[in-house]
Image (cartoon, rainbow over all chains, first blue to last red; front, side, top):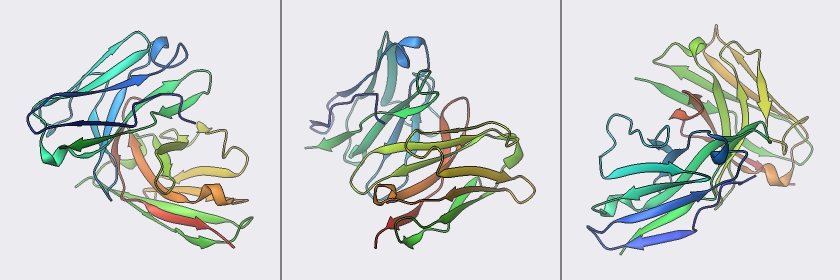
Length: 111
Length: 117
């Protein structure tokens, strides 16, 4: 039940900046629930990338940053590198569903 | 080190049951809420179920409510997912994940469930 919408794909050349949007509604992001981001490299389990909208866990490069405004959130990757090629998912909590929700996922391709 | 290891996946016929396990190590399991999250082949992440640290509170996605049951044994540092009435659309890799403040900070590598006749 993906109630958070992301673009299916984004791409950029090495060194460029790309952004991924995550659009929700008044029952999740717009209700004030935090947004979190995960990176899933090919064939591996998801890994926490950003928590509570804009915080990076230890070990995550500062090339990754997150923000939230209204009913949307964004993940930015600056100085894009080949190893950033992966699927990225946003996640929040939805009060009308009384459950956790993930975004539809975005595939990042490094050209 | 902090680790979650899932097991119990396999091939099962529609309508049958399966129980998944998730063994936790490297942290105080009884202090943390836990989740099951699944990913169908070629698809995105899909939250399945949540259980509080003490096992009292449990929440489920609508798609599995009434068929799946999440539980835990804190004495064994193990999380479970009992799946009954399996359907083809339950075919997925199932991950267990540790919760920290409504996000999942540690994930297992997953176990694959295939529902097919």
